[in-house]
Image 1 (cartoon, helix red, strand yellow):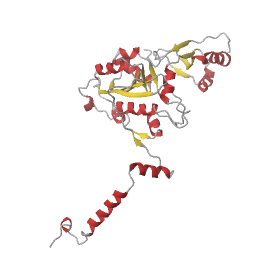
Image 2 (cartoon, one colour; image 1 turned 180 degrees about the vertical axis):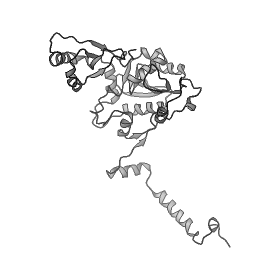
Image 3 (cartoon, one colour; image 1 turned 45 degrees about the vertical axis):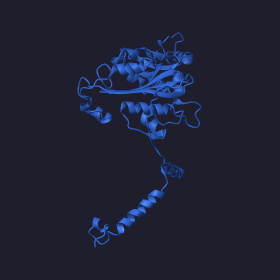
Image 4 (cartoon, helix red, strand yellow; image 1 turned 180 degrees about the horizontal axis):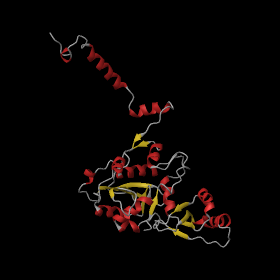
Amino acid sequence: MTSQLDMFSGNPQAASRPQTSRTRFQRAEGAPNEAEMVRILEATGRFQILRKLEPRHVVAVARPDYPLQGVILDTETTGLDARKDDVIEIGLIGFTFNIEGDIGDVTAVYGGLQQPSAAIPHDITRLTGITDAMVEGQVIDMRAVRALVEPADLIIAHNAGFDRPFCEALSPIFARKAWACSNSEIDWAMRGYEGTKLGYLINQSGYFHLGHRAVDDCFALLEVLDRCRPDDDRSPFAELYEASTTSRVRIFAENAPYDLKDRLKERGYRWSDGSDGRPKSWWIEIAEEAVEEELRFLRSDIYQWQDADPPQQRLTAFDRFRSRK
């Protein structure tokens, strides 16, 4: 008589296989759970565990202790020039915070695709995963976007100098808002991070996520901004919010001698070719209290003329990162 176990195999060793399966199952039942496995691996000192980043829950009613409104924003585009390229995806997360820079609740999320005026370049599809088929007939719901942006006290992007001009091309509502850049306005190196790209920040914070999709990147940035390391006295977001409330000054070293350009670069100056509406010159952006010291440097080391008066531009969060054309 053929046993039920033999029915699953035509060879005489079949009877031993169910026992092996039961043995393995019994071992699996007695194995450590996920948290215990992570603890064991990390305790060896030979492993670093990255946890999948899970989006925060959207609350129906925000806690009253966080009266300010923020929006984290990300765009995916067909290129780098807001004057000729198009937004193909936008992601926004609305959240609350307080004046100390503590993040409260996620209050709203929106993500939308939009068909551009021309085919999406292949390198953009490789980077973002967004294809022409995905955006065909799609239009960003600007009513949903405005509902998030209108009450916002601050808009945050990880490269605000890139995202703001594209967003202002979508709607004038973005031009009336205070903006902050989580890439350039936080001292990530002081916090022990080896780079400022979002992927580096996420991985060094102990997470991984699906990058280069707008809403996913927004949730990823939210976690990084709200994460304090043991030796941090405040969160990255608290540092960013304080920076957004402080005026900055941009100084343009017009007509600086060419043979001193390396001295300016060492000092942190960057070159503007004038295409963005700024003077064609080397320039630096500094805190308002550092202006007099910077002018002394320019007058003594660069111009060698004590009456030199290089152009200055005072900026707040309302006009920083805005396209000059």
